[in-house]
Image (cartoon, rainbow over all chains, first blue to last red; front, side, top):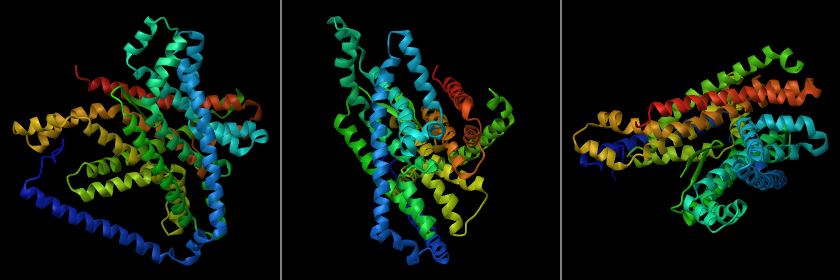
Length: 276
Length: 214
């Protein structure tokens, strides 16, 4: 296999690679052994640290937390898709009075740290809406403004000829956007939208800081009772990793199913970095 | 306005801490991320597997859970540093996965033909890298890398939940103390973050222009 960095290995290089591979395995085993020894010497493998996670009542607490987390993520994403659509199309509007406010909203909420937003909403409205909804609205505002950028980039990525053809048929701007551009843009944007769902799911953990019910908060209840913060953190990690891997798999499938020659939108950290 | 003007020093020292978090974890993430990217691009399969596992594990863990692991978990197994280092460690590990992804996609963006052509005219590895591959890779890496650092800037706010008095921590305090000026406080501190984000985007745009093919 030849790549940008190296050629297909010859006999000597292949031998060198085998030696390097063996060394890597040794290093990995050494690291694993060091971790296991360290944990064993700190009594991390005792039953009282791990038993909670096979106890039905504790599993129930975790499942309830997981349920709240998933509900928060789903509602937040539903709101943010609507908000994203409104502001994304708003940014493309011909009318300055719509375009500029949309631009301001999107740019502001994308640049502000999500936790700041959540603290603000929580401090102003917590009495009327509670901590879970403070989290949901924070997530919805942030992800909505990121998705607005995705929608804008997706609509722009639809080949120009499409909208030109639609205009020449006599369609109005609204018809061009809703009938011609958006349906095609969905194919282009779907992978980006799913990966934003992963970001939103991870960000639900921020509810922990305002004590909103959720998976991470459930973890807190467990470690407060059993004093096993390290073990709990590892369990939480495992749950989040499995959930996110399933979503990543969906994103990859969607990309493969829908992969179009028309284009794609890539987002990194809430910024659209590639549209073609 | 009182909330902002009376506490200006307070807020400024908060942003100073935010910048320190950003620089320390950013530099650490660059170093770890480069190593991970090199492993992921290496010709040795087991290195690729190990690096990919690292990326999958730490990219899919919420940063907050990672901070809980380092901040609350590590002291429990007898590893303990200052709060600042514990939080920075988590940010470093989390961000390094995004750095490695950006670097990897930058190198993968170059067509194999470029390097094969360089090798076939007899350029050794060093020349191929410095003259052909890296200049093009840098160009492709700038926009995603800028986004990674913008995301890191925003992520440093998570330190506020762990007793580190950076900008978002100050915000939390001011929101409590000045109930009538909450919007003002929020917008004021948001502008601080927006300035940092804009400086990073501006720097990235300059770099992109610097490396542009004329």
